[in-house]
Length: 296
Length: 271
Picture (tube, chains in turn orange, blue):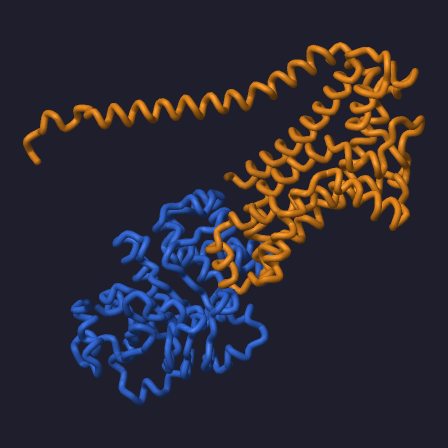
């Protein structure tokens, strides 16, 4: 031990080899990350370059005119906000409560396992299938007609599985020892959920909801059969009205209107993305505020 | 070694005096199964008011299952089945409807410290709050008293708003004890509390337990036989789901045992 071995810290061939391999893998992972960012940057860049010229307060705050060739996107912008808000009001409470039941109350038996499997499968159903389901169920069977309500319900059905899965995963990330400590004190399940489990999973739950906001705002298929229209001169007054929506408006201006200026559809896309990013930033800010309050 | 400052240990009391002390806990023919496998077989014992009752034994002896059965935590463990009778303060806990009231009378300390991810203050105030105490002044008093008794107050009094889960391991374990004390329990169950704690802190906690004996009954599960010897008035030896022997602690350690296995375990001759 006392006599220093001169070769002990000299790199062997194996060390060199390992070092080379690890550098190669780092390069691979880095390149993949770059590859991932590139299309996002290209899309955003193209939109800003080609659509930036269309953006003005007038574009945001007026209705389209002249067969949508001129004017703005205000009814569509307002419509998307309506659809997303109503859909979230419907799906988030139900999704979170169901997830709490499945994670905190339900036992592990064939019935809950079947439900879990169904939820995961439901999350993978294509949106066009949801659209047809919404048309059949909400528009025709419940006779809501093509309305914000029918469209939002369709969006809610579509987003709920993802909310449930995200919520359940954040709940289950809370260590069981915390729950047991609480139960041992004589706390009921609900007291344990309210005081220990939810405060420690709320940021994860919010992340799931944030992702859903983006998806809901961009969906086109589920709403075009159930509540969104190409054009309406009226702004929606209640959930029983039809509405325009940004995603559908983008589809229309990009493909259905001959002789339209190129910057209009790009402008619409830019507004849609900006709306989603704004909603996300608000949620992220809220999440960070919660975290700061917890002194995480 | 029995603390000289402590009240006369029951070990020295005559049989008559012992009989005068009421039983806090009576366990009759307790059998615990996980599926078809028995973790504890036909255990009967009684624990007296204000004694420290030690339970020693190697892993898989059924010690932790025993504690779980006492405060009815078996309902949270799927596949755990409990047969037999457990009387706590004269009531059959197996037939109790209000298990929450039972659990709130029993404080539990786990092998690994569980500092809940809330402030130190909230950790200790949690149980009083669950009981419906909202008054800040009242909570302040409880928090300070419990942290003081758990020998933690001096170390955390300036950072009561720090996160409990960020304290060191030893501090978290004392926080857990403070939390258990905040329940104002009749019975305190400690499950190998010193596993994650350094020897100095262990000694401090042991001193705390000796003082607590005057107010609460304590069940001390430990795999350190010397800890049982230092603290427990009486000790039970569990082995492979069987309660091999129950006796006055000092007798167990001076070789006055009925079963050879107890002697072997206590003397560290166990393969």
